[in-house]
Image (cartoon, rainbow, N blue to C red; front, side):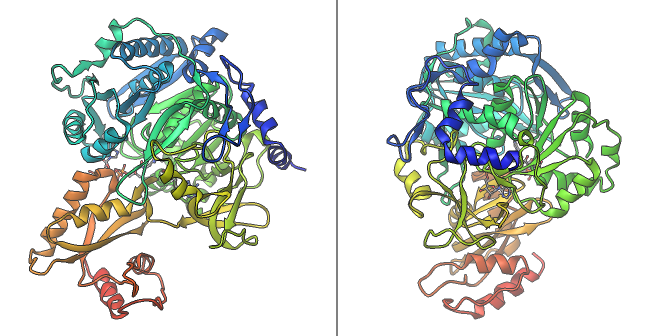
Length: 627
Ligand code: COA
Ligand code: AMP
């Protein structure tokens, strides 16, 4: 039996024992009564009765153990030309003082703090400062527009917001303060105070009576100790796209998260204390929460915080330069980033110029990885390239390949085998497991392992309806895919209206709500169209109200601007077409899957339920014509 098979089988046979052993690697102020209580919450809760502090586990205990002088965070910012090394001792000082500043503003256990920051050291410092107080952070990605930030402020109801004067995108400075002010004006809930990081690239005027300079507040505050909280108390809320315009607030608890993420570092990534991990994502996404901030720090490793892009900052060799310079052992990014690098440096000359002898593994996730991309980078690196599948909801990998268990042979196109603790199956529409190799909805047998969401923020009914009700006894991932006879899982597409643009998860339903708000639009559909760089990009199809006679190019410009203004540049909504009708079933449901096939120039069969088949030819002609 392989090491993977044995560990997987042990976790399946005795999950409480498996996770109790993992929990012993964490410092507890009070040990849990048991690993799992099936009677609590929607499907049970992990580590009830336990009390701990996540910041203590990620920072203070490493200082106490003598790692104070070791780098915790290596900040590398090619967009500003700055770098910094933050040791564990320095991180502890900063986090404790910022926690003190938050406490002085009245933030305590259970209070929410929204963090709207670019990739600067203050982002992990702010997250950890909240964790230190037992407060609940909610980080919002910088590429979202004010309205999206407002929706998150309205839902999370933060006492305090931590933000910055600006973020830096290649070629432009993104002023955060106007976005923040607009969001606060739009939200029915108002924070008591804002702490603003003034960046040297562009400062901003502080709003009197509400805003304080973050660095000044931190400098003046007394250090605050770690406050133990219940293992089942929330550590953070991270909003992710649902099928409607209202984002879902994924809740992460303290105990299960600390245990599972700590466990994942050795198991999946092969990273231990003192080793360097580079996750090229953003703290606004779950990958950033888990593998830029929490997991590397929970094991006492060093994490690279990179403020830049895979290409253009300054070139397609920037990731490899970071790996070489800091002795990175595990790197993690999205396939899109590798496609972008491949496009600029197809022969890998910039990669060959770097000493990557310390790099052990490249991990990919965030979207389906097309085999040619994985093969290209694996051939150049001559190191294992591991695709692993997960979601904001799970917080860590559902499937993968396991450095800590000896790797099994990779099969590009598959996300590997289930991580110990997950029982994955492809189900048919009736919720029955399909035979190996058949495509179905991928589902995880309940209970979900530690770190996975216990609920949605103040939306228990939505949690049950979105994830638990379709297949009783299972968590519905809303991903379609296959489990083969050897246990490899391949994720093919979503079963809902979510699209994946450059590794970013976006709701077409949310974009449709924006397009429908344009005064000339009678109805619309947004579908994800294949894109060689970003995987998918959104395409809008709109039917005009009678009498709306604006030139199409002008209307499309307005629609593009509207989506950018309401959802944000990250939506990458750049293309829309006017059509006379949308294809629908006789009961009025828009045939989005057929539209997507037409947009991708794939063969399609005319759905038998279609109301008016002639419309498909018209749309095909419309999409083949130049925009
Ligand atoms: N703040 C403000 N704007 C942002 C932003 C941020 N934090 N992040 C992205 N944007 C903007 C970009 O400037 C761009 O705006 P534009 O339309 O004016 O050019 C838009 O959002 C789309 O950004 P992006 O998805 O980064 O596309 P790009 O064309 O600029 O770059 C890639 C293409 C492939 C280099 C880029 O998508 C990439 O690095 N992808 C990897 C994604 C990733 O790490 N995902 C995390 C999941 S693991
Ligand atoms: P997010 O919640 O933003 O992390 O996005 C999660 C979604 O991204 C999943 O439900 C999948 O649709 C997709 N995804 C993430 N990782 C992979 C992967 N390795 N292979 C295929 N799809 C993936």
